[in-house]
Length: 235
Image 1 (cartoon, rainbow, N blue to C red):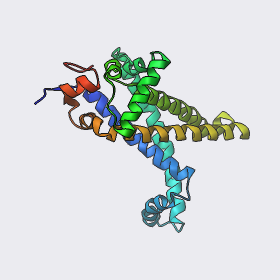
Image 2 (cartoon, helix red, strand yellow; image 1 turned 180 degrees about the vertical axis):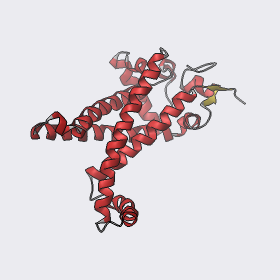
Image 3 (cartoon, rainbow, N blue to C red; image 1 turned 120 degrees about the vertical axis):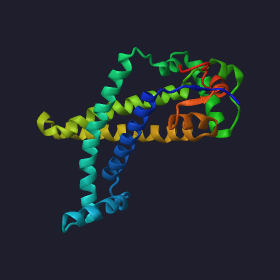
Image 4 (cartoon, helix red, strand yellow; image 1 turned 90 degrees about the vertical axis):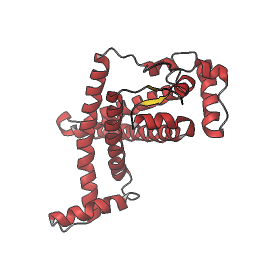
């Protein structure tokens, strides 16, 4: 039986879990506001008990959407504070962004690695040994997904804060519309990131990493050496 090694510490796993909860909460509440007709069943499920408890004689769907708007704002601020605190914690321990190493190479190398990984994830083809030999803790697709997440976070943060304090900032109608457009673009990028990240995470070849994220942070050493380029301990 292969020896197990830790590739994720407790702080990383806890931060990922908190971020996951906040991120999904923002997506669900954002969808309720962005596509209220398609998600009216969610608003009804939330608004029905709320309108009953409060004794409000109102449409439960409307109550649910109002709740989603308030929840979206509160969680949005909490998520922003969490991201700032986590980045300060991460940088305070002089940790390097190893994920950026994957996209620091030539475009040709990145393209070849990406093509091999896409074939692996969609067609089940094995990753060529020369490609696997260059891969480290994070592959090029992970690096690109990180850029996608970063872009969505910047767009959502700037536009979200601007819309939340639009009256205090004195935003014009045209600027407000621009902020809504940027928020929608950021939301689309975030949703795309979540779908791609989930697909890759649930792929059979990544099951050990998925189990590690929600358990001890440990994976078999031979798996880590083959898929992460990690040997003997946490990178």
